[in-house]
Image 1 (cartoon, one colour):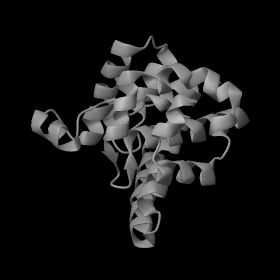
Image 2 (cartoon, helix red, strand yellow):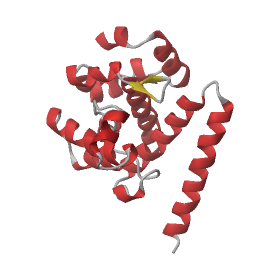
Image 3 (spheres, rainbow, N blue to C red):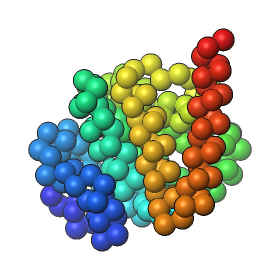
Image 4 (tube, rainbow, N blue to C red):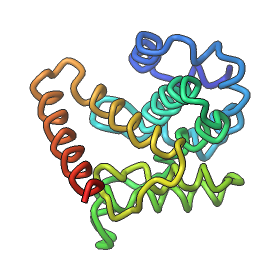
Length: 193
């Protein structure tokens, strides 16, 4: 695949250690090849994400983790892999989003990603829901994920983010885990009342 050369050595090693099959999984690659080879999407290689990776590699990590989980849960794997890959498909930096004065990064970037994805690719309702609601656990006002695939990506995105941020920094990892546990507890209270 042409994009293998564009991944940084550190990120390729990172992905291969966690999920070594993504580059040789023919079904996964069939679902996402057009996205991975798209010039606009490849611009995500240039954008730092979570201070430790690129937005491209984070999106790929979330997509393949979601795909693996979705196989076990009987999800629509094509929509899942594609929606997850596009969940952070926006080119604006955190600072540029703050300067827009329309909301926090967590609240705004899913809408930017959806608009960008819609301008480049034809999306189905599951893919749209995945993109716009993937921050549900951090920003509940985005709406409750409607589909199984959306819920998978919401959780996979947090797992991958925690892994990326906490890798080599156990204190940071524990800090993120604590925040996520508090949010899960709040959601549980919300849904049980």
